[in-house]
Length: 319
Image 1 (cartoon, rainbow, N blue to C red):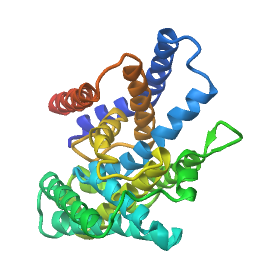
Image 2: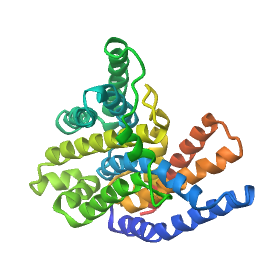
Image 3: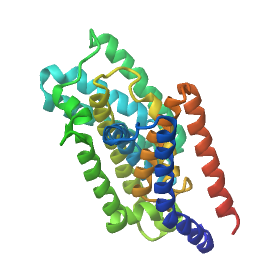
Image 4: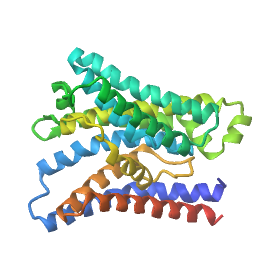
């Protein structure tokens, strides 16, 4: 990416947070116009509660997109982690949570090996792994689980509990993860390596950096965050079925690009992604009030991704 292109992207990103916050407020105002009195403390609490799983899922996606990749298995991993967690709950909550997180780490490891070691294109590798995860989960559900597993009470509290009546418990977990990501991306050597790999992998290699190790770790982190998102989502809806997080795949990518992370890699931030997740959750609320079908919502998310990708292509192509 050339100097002028980088400068253009950074200028957009520096202003994007304020623009995104303004858009968020505008959407909330639209809801208040459509249904007066709807925007209150309870509504804000619900928005944050449902934005948290998406925001955590999009966190892993952000890490991968910064390096110039994409992970199309995040929703499958989230679903599998939640289902495995719930199915293991009768043996203890700790075992259940660990089992769910291990699913994310395992899939992330395989994705990382495929992309970083065997140089498989991220889109192909993660799409294939998503299918493998879904197929394996279906076999597991038929062979090892006789009924739809229930969600442990502690997970339900994590996903839908509140403190001081209106503050979601999941917000605390999301805030901690967000702080770690924001500081880690900009303030650590590993974070800077992610940007360097996304900007120019060949230059990074010539500088003596073992890029495959960085990418491998990054995909494992994405898998782990996907598993956390799935577990939180299961607590939010108090259920764990075989299609739990499938509908969040496109929104996880849309939140990243709305937040200002370049789909070509090398630039971006998690703070923008977090606001993007909130925007999409509020947008979903608007569309629900207008009785827009879920299928149309998915079309809209896809259109958002295409339009923003085209905008980035135009910015970068001017140089």
